[in-house]
Image 1 (spheres, rainbow, N blue to C red):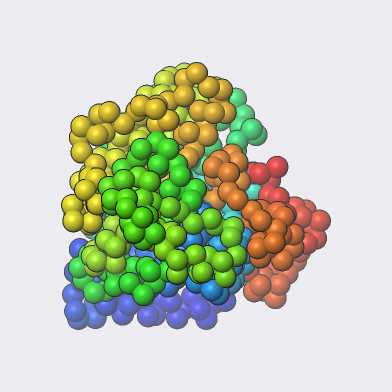
Image 2 (cartoon, rainbow, N blue to C red; image 1 turned 135 degrees about the vertical axis):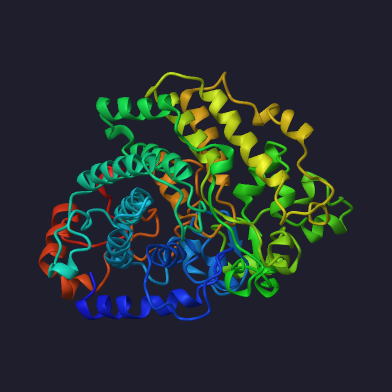
Length: 510
């Protein structure tokens, strides 16, 4: 947690920062506002919380590596490609926003839309906590945001307790949105409380799923009740960050051609799309130069070749020079507004429910949810403005193609085992994050399920603790050693035998 000085500085400069924010379609007054209002606070919080962490082509390309969607073909190995990081630490910084969220709720008191602002505050705390606990393990949650009241050393709550508190906050947020009104300052859903209510319910499903084999019968019943109630995401409710042609809100990879020519889709992605005859391949990639020289056409699935994520950087760079690999599609650098960042989609919700049905948590047709999820994301790409025909190699996704998608390897594997079908579901869910810049949750889903199987070569792995092991977490922020040492030391002793390591297994994966 940060010291009082930083909180005071944040509170002081926030109105000035807000006046300069032009993200998305929100246009703020060019004059510095004399009064902070809840909508201005919310806008700044959402921009800081949902935009890519450092919007430039180089960092954006790094943000796609851990989940094995893409591969860097440069001679200098990127740690994210080889199971490590330039900065292998988690962060509690987002919890600083709780002070501003509290101010936002106070400023909305007495307004007709106050319930909506209360819902946002609860949702955002849950959102921050969910990411942090999966990143690190036990975290300060129940006492988070208490610095203004003099609590600079919050206790670490057990991960199981954190997840249950997150569920409680999401449920309370859903109730606030059920009583909410249209509100201002929201760049994600344009202030629609109905869509936020749907998201809160869908998020509860996502949180419950990470309990995995530890889920209780009561929690399964809660999952089933949420699905049965039906107040969930629709295809029109995708939680996404929409970029714009405004230079202050561009897609992070716009105009990144010098980086694009060093990035290939992984063989894991390309091989699956070829196996299922999935036309997203032509949206994601360019044909491999060597295959075109060899006589294949750009609309031939066999003209595409992914790069092995575990191969050494030196060999990958040499193979690129020989034109062996496909590169990512040229459309990713061509449009300032680019593809929206898909944060939580109707498709993902469908795959979450399909997996739960296969696990026996609730009745229903997993096949129907699986097919609805796939059709929704194909429909999304079919109508994506940043994917015009000139970039699709003569293989656009059409309605007729969607209607006939579920044949061969793409058909739901009703004759297979439960695990065969879960692998299908999770692999389709993994593809949702392709070149989105926010794919770390896909890596966490791999840790939970084992799907799809990510390659690991100890000879190229950069995991400093054990190159033969998949890292399970980030370490706690180094600042905790000096600002909250008693609680920090207790947390790592209770969970990890006193060693704050990336290979240590947090409760949710045990």
